[in-house]
Length: 452
Image (cartoon, rainbow, N blue to C red; front, side, top):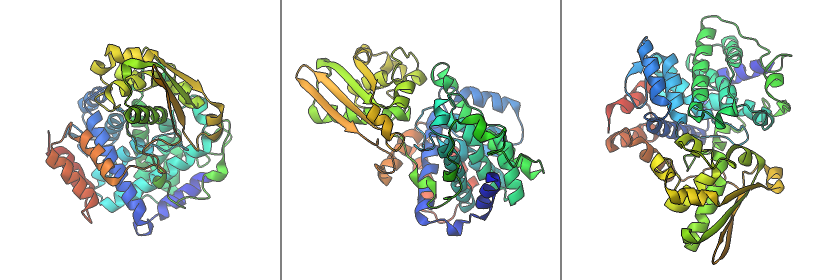
Protein backbone atom coordinates (compact mmCIF):
# COMPACT_ATOMS: atom_id res chain seq x y z
CA UNK A 1 0.00 0.00 0.00
CA UNK A 2 1.27 3.44 -0.95
CA UNK A 3 0.34 4.96 2.40
CA UNK A 4 2.69 2.46 4.04
CA UNK A 5 5.53 3.44 1.68
CA UNK A 6 4.92 7.11 2.39
CA UNK A 7 4.77 6.50 6.13
CA UNK A 8 8.08 4.66 6.08
CA UNK A 9 9.71 7.49 4.14
CA UNK A 10 8.32 10.13 6.51
CA UNK A 11 9.35 8.21 9.61
CA UNK A 12 12.88 7.43 8.43
CA UNK A 13 13.82 10.80 6.97
CA UNK A 14 16.42 12.39 9.24
CA UNK A 15 17.85 15.90 9.15
CA UNK A 16 21.38 14.48 9.07
CA UNK A 17 20.60 12.77 5.76
CA UNK A 18 19.06 15.83 4.09
CA UNK A 19 21.53 17.44 1.66
CA UNK A 20 22.67 20.98 2.42
CA UNK A 21 21.11 22.34 -0.76
CA UNK A 22 17.75 20.90 0.32
CA UNK A 23 18.05 22.54 3.75
CA UNK A 24 18.84 25.86 2.08
CA UNK A 25 15.91 25.50 -0.34
CA UNK A 26 13.59 24.74 2.58
CA UNK A 27 14.70 27.91 4.32
CA UNK A 28 13.96 29.84 1.13
CA UNK A 29 10.46 28.34 1.07
CA UNK A 30 9.95 29.32 4.71
CA UNK A 31 11.13 32.87 4.02
CA UNK A 32 8.93 33.22 0.94
CA UNK A 33 5.93 31.87 2.83
CA UNK A 34 6.39 34.28 5.73
CA UNK A 35 6.61 37.21 3.32
CA UNK A 36 3.45 36.41 1.39
CA UNK A 37 1.57 35.51 4.58
CA UNK A 38 2.51 38.80 6.23
CA UNK A 39 1.50 40.83 3.19
CA UNK A 40 -1.67 38.82 2.66
CA UNK A 41 -2.80 39.00 6.27
CA UNK A 42 -4.42 42.40 5.87
CA UNK A 43 -6.50 41.92 2.73
CA UNK A 44 -9.26 39.82 1.17
CA UNK A 45 -10.54 36.82 3.07
CA UNK A 46 -7.73 36.79 5.65
CA UNK A 47 -9.16 39.37 8.13
CA UNK A 48 -12.58 37.68 8.02
CA UNK A 49 -11.18 34.23 8.80
CA UNK A 50 -8.96 35.68 11.52
CA UNK A 51 -11.88 37.47 13.18
CA UNK A 52 -14.00 34.32 13.21
CA UNK A 53 -11.28 32.05 14.56
CA UNK A 54 -10.18 34.46 17.29
CA UNK A 55 -13.80 34.84 18.42
CA UNK A 56 -14.00 31.07 18.88
CA UNK A 57 -11.26 31.23 21.50
CA UNK A 58 -9.27 28.20 22.65
CA UNK A 59 -5.75 27.48 23.82
CA UNK A 60 -3.02 29.93 22.80
CA UNK A 61 -0.62 27.62 20.99
CA UNK A 62 0.46 29.26 17.74
CA UNK A 63 0.95 32.75 16.33
CA UNK A 64 -1.34 34.44 13.84
CA UNK A 65 1.01 35.84 11.20
CA UNK A 66 0.45 39.56 10.69
CA UNK A 67 -1.57 39.90 13.87
CA UNK A 68 0.56 38.66 16.76
CA UNK A 69 -2.15 37.03 18.81
CA UNK A 70 -1.98 33.32 19.49
CA UNK A 71 -4.72 30.75 18.92
CA UNK A 72 -4.90 26.97 18.78
CA UNK A 73 -2.62 25.26 16.28
CA UNK A 74 -5.76 24.05 14.52
CA UNK A 75 -7.00 27.60 13.96
CA UNK A 76 -3.56 29.08 13.24
CA UNK A 77 -2.98 26.67 10.36
CA UNK A 78 -6.23 27.77 8.73
CA UNK A 79 -5.69 31.50 9.31
CA UNK A 80 -2.11 31.54 8.09
CA UNK A 81 -2.81 29.29 5.12
CA UNK A 82 -5.54 31.64 3.96
CA UNK A 83 -3.32 34.71 4.44
CA UNK A 84 -0.46 33.19 2.45
CA UNK A 85 -2.62 32.51 -0.62
CA UNK A 86 -4.49 35.81 -0.63
CA UNK A 87 -1.93 37.57 -2.85
CA UNK A 88 -1.52 34.55 -5.15
CA UNK A 89 2.24 35.02 -4.84
CA UNK A 90 3.15 31.74 -3.09
CA UNK A 91 5.45 28.97 -4.28
CA UNK A 92 4.38 26.09 -6.52
CA UNK A 93 5.39 23.03 -8.52
CA UNK A 94 4.50 22.82 -12.19
CA UNK A 95 4.21 19.02 -12.45
CA UNK A 96 2.16 18.74 -9.26
CA UNK A 97 0.01 21.65 -10.49
CA UNK A 98 -0.34 23.08 -7.02
CA UNK A 99 1.12 25.18 -4.22
CA UNK A 100 2.74 22.99 -1.55
CA UNK A 101 3.99 25.73 0.75
CA UNK A 102 0.67 27.28 1.69
CA UNK A 103 -0.75 23.93 2.80
CA UNK A 104 2.37 22.50 4.46
CA UNK A 105 4.21 25.40 6.08
CA UNK A 106 1.30 26.92 8.07
CA UNK A 107 0.53 23.46 9.47
CA UNK A 108 4.21 22.79 10.27
CA UNK A 109 4.74 26.20 11.90
CA UNK A 110 1.59 25.88 13.99
CA UNK A 111 2.47 22.37 15.14
CA UNK A 112 6.12 23.28 15.59
CA UNK A 113 5.27 26.25 17.78
CA UNK A 114 2.81 24.17 19.77
CA UNK A 115 5.42 21.47 20.37
CA UNK A 116 8.36 23.91 20.81
CA UNK A 117 10.52 22.11 18.25
CA UNK A 118 13.87 23.11 16.77
CA UNK A 119 14.44 24.54 13.33
CA UNK A 120 15.94 21.21 12.29
CA UNK A 121 12.75 19.38 13.26
CA UNK A 122 10.71 21.99 11.39
CA UNK A 123 12.84 21.50 8.27
CA UNK A 124 12.41 17.72 8.47
CA UNK A 125 8.65 18.16 8.56
CA UNK A 126 8.53 20.65 5.71
CA UNK A 127 10.81 18.53 3.49
CA UNK A 128 8.71 15.37 3.84
CA UNK A 129 5.51 17.38 3.46
CA UNK A 130 6.64 18.83 0.13
CA UNK A 131 7.80 15.41 -1.06
CA UNK A 132 4.45 13.76 -0.40
CA UNK A 133 2.45 16.65 -1.85
CA UNK A 134 4.49 16.77 -5.04
CA UNK A 135 4.58 13.01 -5.60
CA UNK A 136 0.80 12.72 -5.22
CA UNK A 137 0.05 15.86 -7.23
CA UNK A 138 2.33 14.84 -10.10
CA UNK A 139 0.73 11.39 -10.25
CA UNK A 140 -2.81 12.69 -10.84
CA UNK A 141 -2.17 15.77 -12.96
CA UNK A 142 -2.94 17.21 -15.42
CA UNK A 143 -6.10 15.03 -15.46
CA UNK A 144 -6.99 16.15 -11.93
CA UNK A 145 -6.79 19.81 -12.88
CA UNK A 146 -8.76 19.31 -16.09
CA UNK A 147 -11.58 17.70 -14.10
CA UNK A 148 -11.91 20.93 -12.14
CA UNK A 149 -10.12 20.09 -8.90
CA UNK A 150 -7.90 22.54 -7.02
CA UNK A 151 -4.79 20.47 -6.32
CA UNK A 152 -3.66 22.58 -3.38
CA UNK A 153 -6.91 21.84 -1.59
CA UNK A 154 -7.19 18.18 -2.50
CA UNK A 155 -3.55 17.09 -2.15
CA UNK A 156 -2.56 19.61 0.51
CA UNK A 157 -3.96 17.57 3.43
CA UNK A 158 -1.52 14.74 2.65
CA UNK A 159 1.50 17.05 2.71
CA UNK A 160 0.34 18.88 5.82
CA UNK A 161 -0.36 15.61 7.64
CA UNK A 162 3.09 14.31 6.69
CA UNK A 163 4.76 17.42 8.09
CA UNK A 164 2.76 17.38 11.31
CA UNK A 165 3.27 13.64 11.79
CA UNK A 166 7.03 14.17 11.54
CA UNK A 167 6.98 17.06 13.99
CA UNK A 168 4.84 15.07 16.44
CA UNK A 169 7.26 12.13 16.09
CA UNK A 170 4.50 9.68 15.22
CA UNK A 171 5.50 6.08 14.51
CA UNK A 172 4.98 4.53 11.08
CA UNK A 173 1.54 3.12 11.82
CA UNK A 174 0.31 6.41 13.24
CA UNK A 175 1.78 8.30 10.28
CA UNK A 176 -0.01 5.96 7.86
CA UNK A 177 -3.27 6.53 9.73
CA UNK A 178 -2.70 10.28 9.51
CA UNK A 179 -2.38 10.06 5.73
CA UNK A 180 -5.61 8.09 5.53
CA UNK A 181 -7.44 10.62 7.70
CA UNK A 182 -5.98 13.47 5.63
CA UNK A 183 -7.26 11.95 2.40
CA UNK A 184 -10.79 11.78 3.78
CA UNK A 185 -10.69 15.57 4.04
CA UNK A 186 -9.49 16.25 0.49
CA UNK A 187 -11.54 19.01 -1.13
CA UNK A 188 -11.13 21.88 -3.56
CA UNK A 189 -12.81 23.03 -6.79
CA UNK A 190 -11.50 25.38 -9.44
CA UNK A 191 -14.97 26.82 -9.97
CA UNK A 192 -13.71 29.38 -7.48
CA UNK A 193 -11.55 30.81 -10.28
CA UNK A 194 -14.70 31.53 -12.28
CA UNK A 195 -16.77 33.15 -9.52
CA UNK A 196 -16.31 33.90 -5.85
CA UNK A 197 -12.53 34.25 -6.21
CA UNK A 198 -12.32 35.79 -2.75
CA UNK A 199 -12.80 32.28 -1.34
CA UNK A 200 -9.94 30.63 -3.25
CA UNK A 201 -7.50 30.94 -0.29
CA UNK A 202 -9.95 29.03 1.90
CA UNK A 203 -9.05 25.77 0.15
CA UNK A 204 -5.31 25.75 0.99
CA UNK A 205 -6.11 27.04 4.47
CA UNK A 206 -8.48 24.15 5.03
CA UNK A 207 -5.85 21.76 3.65
CA UNK A 208 -3.35 22.97 6.25
CA UNK A 209 -5.94 22.64 8.98
CA UNK A 210 -6.91 19.16 7.77
CA UNK A 211 -3.29 18.03 8.10
CA UNK A 212 -3.13 19.27 11.69
CA UNK A 213 -6.35 17.46 12.55
CA UNK A 214 -5.24 14.25 10.81
CA UNK A 215 -1.94 14.05 12.67
CA UNK A 216 -3.47 14.88 16.03
CA UNK A 217 -6.20 12.27 15.58
CA UNK A 218 -3.64 9.68 14.54
CA UNK A 219 -1.61 10.45 17.64
CA UNK A 220 -4.71 9.75 19.74
CA UNK A 221 -5.12 6.35 18.12
CA UNK A 222 -7.63 7.11 15.36
CA UNK A 223 -7.36 4.84 12.32
CA UNK A 224 -7.52 5.96 8.70
CA UNK A 225 -7.95 3.81 5.60
CA UNK A 226 -4.59 2.33 4.66
CA UNK A 227 -5.85 1.94 1.10
CA UNK A 228 -6.65 5.66 0.82
CA UNK A 229 -4.86 5.93 -2.53
CA UNK A 230 -5.37 2.71 -4.48
CA UNK A 231 -8.57 1.38 -2.90
CA UNK A 232 -11.64 0.75 -5.06
CA UNK A 233 -13.20 3.93 -3.66
CA UNK A 234 -9.89 5.64 -2.95
CA UNK A 235 -8.17 8.84 -3.97
CA UNK A 236 -6.88 7.74 -7.38
CA UNK A 237 -10.24 6.63 -8.73
CA UNK A 238 -12.20 9.50 -7.25
CA UNK A 239 -9.95 12.35 -8.32
CA UNK A 240 -8.28 11.50 -11.63
CA UNK A 241 -8.93 9.82 -14.96
CA UNK A 242 -5.25 9.11 -15.47
CA UNK A 243 -2.87 8.15 -12.66
CA UNK A 244 0.85 7.52 -13.00
CA UNK A 245 1.55 5.54 -9.83
CA UNK A 246 5.02 4.56 -10.98
CA UNK A 247 5.99 8.20 -10.45
CA UNK A 248 4.74 8.26 -6.88
CA UNK A 249 6.94 6.26 -4.52
CA UNK A 250 9.87 4.94 -6.54
CA UNK A 251 11.89 8.11 -6.31
CA UNK A 252 11.03 9.57 -2.90
CA UNK A 253 13.83 11.89 -1.94
CA UNK A 254 15.90 11.03 -5.05
CA UNK A 255 16.30 13.97 -5.36
CA UNK A 256 14.03 15.81 -2.95
CA UNK A 257 11.32 17.50 -4.99
CA UNK A 258 11.43 20.69 -2.94
CA UNK A 259 14.43 21.56 -5.13
CA UNK A 260 12.04 21.84 -8.09
CA UNK A 261 9.77 24.43 -6.54
CA UNK A 262 9.12 27.69 -8.39
CA UNK A 263 8.81 31.09 -6.74
CA UNK A 264 6.53 33.80 -8.06
CA UNK A 265 7.54 37.20 -9.36
CA UNK A 266 4.02 38.49 -10.03
CA UNK A 267 0.98 38.55 -7.74
CA UNK A 268 -1.17 36.52 -10.13
CA UNK A 269 -1.99 33.02 -11.31
CA UNK A 270 1.20 31.25 -12.42
CA UNK A 271 -0.25 30.53 -15.85
CA UNK A 272 -0.14 34.28 -16.58
CA UNK A 273 3.57 34.61 -15.76
CA UNK A 274 5.21 33.47 -19.03
CA UNK A 275 3.12 35.94 -21.02
CA UNK A 276 3.91 38.75 -18.57
CA UNK A 277 7.63 37.95 -18.75
CA UNK A 278 7.46 38.08 -22.55
CA UNK A 279 5.42 41.30 -22.58
CA UNK A 280 7.78 42.99 -20.13
CA UNK A 281 10.77 42.03 -22.28
CA UNK A 282 9.10 43.54 -25.34
CA UNK A 283 8.20 46.77 -23.55
CA UNK A 284 11.60 47.18 -21.90
CA UNK A 285 13.74 46.31 -24.92
CA UNK A 286 11.87 48.31 -27.55
CA UNK A 287 10.74 51.46 -25.78
CA UNK A 288 7.18 50.99 -27.00
CA UNK A 289 4.73 53.86 -26.59
CA UNK A 290 1.66 52.27 -25.05
CA UNK A 291 -0.57 54.75 -26.88
CA UNK A 292 0.66 53.27 -30.15
CA UNK A 293 -0.32 49.69 -29.29
CA UNK A 294 -2.90 48.38 -31.73
CA UNK A 295 -3.10 44.77 -30.57
CA UNK A 296 -1.45 42.29 -28.20
CA UNK A 297 -1.68 38.63 -29.24
CA UNK A 298 -0.82 35.96 -26.67
CA UNK A 299 -0.16 32.40 -27.84
CA UNK A 300 -0.22 29.99 -24.92
CA UNK A 301 -1.35 26.54 -23.75
CA UNK A 302 -4.89 25.33 -23.03
CA UNK A 303 -4.77 25.42 -19.23
CA UNK A 304 -3.55 29.02 -19.28
CA UNK A 305 -6.30 29.98 -21.70
CA UNK A 306 -9.02 28.22 -19.73
CA UNK A 307 -8.03 29.69 -16.38
CA UNK A 308 -6.92 33.18 -17.40
CA UNK A 309 -7.57 33.97 -21.05
CA UNK A 310 -11.20 34.99 -21.11
CA UNK A 311 -11.82 37.33 -18.19
CA UNK A 312 -11.77 40.97 -19.35
CA UNK A 313 -14.44 42.34 -17.04
CA UNK A 314 -12.84 41.63 -13.66
CA UNK A 315 -13.74 44.36 -11.18
CA UNK A 316 -12.00 43.02 -8.07
CA UNK A 317 -8.39 42.35 -7.23
CA UNK A 318 -8.77 38.56 -6.99
CA UNK A 319 -10.64 38.41 -10.29
CA UNK A 320 -7.89 40.34 -12.05
CA UNK A 321 -5.27 37.87 -10.86
CA UNK A 322 -6.93 35.36 -13.20
CA UNK A 323 -7.24 37.72 -16.15
CA UNK A 324 -4.42 37.65 -18.68
CA UNK A 325 -5.86 40.66 -20.56
CA UNK A 326 -6.06 42.84 -17.44
CA UNK A 327 -2.67 41.67 -16.18
CA UNK A 328 -1.23 42.63 -19.56
CA UNK A 329 -2.80 46.05 -19.20
CA UNK A 330 -1.19 46.48 -15.80
CA UNK A 331 2.22 45.44 -17.16
CA UNK A 332 2.01 47.85 -20.10
CA UNK A 333 0.91 50.82 -18.02
CA UNK A 334 2.92 50.31 -14.85
CA UNK A 335 5.77 48.06 -15.95
CA UNK A 336 5.03 45.74 -13.03
CA UNK A 337 2.40 43.26 -11.87
CA UNK A 338 3.03 43.17 -8.15
CA UNK A 339 0.87 43.60 -5.09
CA UNK A 340 0.49 47.35 -5.61
CA UNK A 341 -0.66 46.97 -9.21
CA UNK A 342 -3.43 44.50 -8.36
CA UNK A 343 -5.34 47.23 -6.55
CA UNK A 344 -8.64 48.81 -7.47
CA UNK A 345 -6.93 52.14 -8.12
CA UNK A 346 -4.72 50.59 -10.80
CA UNK A 347 -7.36 48.24 -12.18
CA UNK A 348 -9.80 51.11 -12.72
CA UNK A 349 -7.25 53.11 -14.68
CA UNK A 350 -8.99 53.68 -18.07
CA UNK A 351 -5.72 53.09 -19.90
CA UNK A 352 -5.33 49.67 -18.29
CA UNK A 353 -8.84 48.80 -19.44
CA UNK A 354 -8.20 50.02 -22.98
CA UNK A 355 -5.04 47.93 -23.27
CA UNK A 356 -6.89 44.88 -21.89
CA UNK A 357 -9.49 45.23 -24.63
CA UNK A 358 -6.72 44.94 -27.22
CA UNK A 359 -5.43 41.60 -25.86
CA UNK A 360 -6.33 38.36 -27.62
CA UNK A 361 -5.43 34.98 -26.13
CA UNK A 362 -5.21 31.86 -28.28
CA UNK A 363 -4.23 28.24 -27.70
CA UNK A 364 -1.10 27.09 -29.50
CA UNK A 365 -1.20 23.28 -29.98
CA UNK A 366 2.58 23.10 -29.95
CA UNK A 367 2.62 24.60 -26.47
CA UNK A 368 0.05 22.07 -25.33
CA UNK A 369 2.38 19.31 -26.48
CA UNK A 370 5.15 20.39 -24.11
CA UNK A 371 2.89 21.24 -21.14
CA UNK A 372 3.52 20.78 -18.20
CA UNK A 373 7.21 20.26 -18.95
CA UNK A 374 7.13 23.81 -20.24
CA UNK A 375 4.69 26.59 -19.43
CA UNK A 376 5.38 28.74 -22.45
CA UNK A 377 3.89 31.76 -24.17
CA UNK A 378 4.70 33.93 -27.15
CA UNK A 379 3.51 37.51 -27.18
CA UNK A 380 3.18 39.67 -30.31
CA UNK A 381 2.72 43.40 -29.72
CA UNK A 382 1.37 45.06 -32.85
CA UNK A 383 2.04 48.80 -33.01
CA UNK A 384 1.88 51.60 -35.51
CA UNK A 385 5.65 51.15 -35.97
CA UNK A 386 5.67 47.41 -36.44
CA UNK A 387 5.21 44.09 -34.62
CA UNK A 388 7.45 43.02 -31.74
CA UNK A 389 7.55 39.43 -30.51
CA UNK A 390 9.08 37.53 -27.61
CA UNK A 391 8.78 33.95 -26.37
CA UNK A 392 9.21 32.64 -22.82
CA UNK A 393 9.37 28.88 -22.31
CA UNK A 394 9.76 28.90 -18.53
CA UNK A 395 8.87 31.99 -16.51
CA UNK A 396 11.13 33.66 -13.97
CA UNK A 397 11.29 31.74 -10.71
CA UNK A 398 11.19 28.23 -12.17
CA UNK A 399 14.14 26.05 -11.12
CA UNK A 400 15.60 26.32 -14.63
CA UNK A 401 15.18 30.13 -14.54
CA UNK A 402 15.63 30.84 -10.83
CA UNK A 403 15.63 33.90 -8.64
CA UNK A 404 18.98 34.76 -7.18
CA UNK A 405 19.20 34.54 -3.40
CA UNK A 406 19.16 38.33 -3.22
CA UNK A 407 16.09 38.59 -5.47
CA UNK A 408 14.19 36.17 -3.26
CA UNK A 409 15.21 37.98 -0.09
CA UNK A 410 14.18 41.29 -1.62
CA UNK A 411 10.79 39.84 -2.50
CA UNK A 412 10.40 38.82 1.15
CA UNK A 413 11.40 42.27 2.39
CA UNK A 414 8.96 44.02 0.05
CA UNK A 415 6.11 41.83 1.22
CA UNK A 416 7.02 41.71 4.91
CA UNK A 417 7.51 45.45 5.31
CA UNK A 418 3.77 45.90 4.95
CA UNK A 419 3.50 44.50 8.47
CA UNK A 420 7.02 44.48 9.96
CA UNK A 421 9.59 47.23 10.28
CA UNK A 422 12.97 46.84 8.52
CA UNK A 423 14.65 45.58 11.69
CA UNK A 424 12.12 42.77 11.91
CA UNK A 425 12.61 41.66 8.32
CA UNK A 426 16.37 41.58 8.77
CA UNK A 427 16.12 39.58 12.00
CA UNK A 428 13.99 36.92 10.33
CA UNK A 429 16.51 36.56 7.50
CA UNK A 430 19.34 36.29 10.01
CA UNK A 431 17.59 33.55 12.00
CA UNK A 432 16.85 31.50 8.91
CA UNK A 433 20.12 31.89 7.03
CA UNK A 434 22.83 32.81 9.53
CA UNK A 435 21.89 31.15 12.78
CA UNK A 436 22.99 27.55 13.07
CA UNK A 437 20.25 26.61 15.53
CA UNK A 438 16.89 28.21 16.21
CA UNK A 439 13.55 27.17 17.62
CA UNK A 440 10.20 27.66 15.94
CA UNK A 441 8.93 29.73 18.85
CA UNK A 442 11.90 32.06 18.41
CA UNK A 443 11.12 32.51 14.72
CA UNK A 444 7.45 33.19 15.35
CA UNK A 445 8.29 35.65 18.13
CA UNK A 446 10.13 37.73 15.52
CA UNK A 447 6.98 37.79 13.41
CA UNK A 448 5.20 39.40 16.38
CA UNK A 449 7.90 41.67 17.80
CA UNK A 450 8.55 44.27 15.10
CA UNK A 451 5.31 45.87 13.88
CA UNK A 452 5.65 48.46 11.15
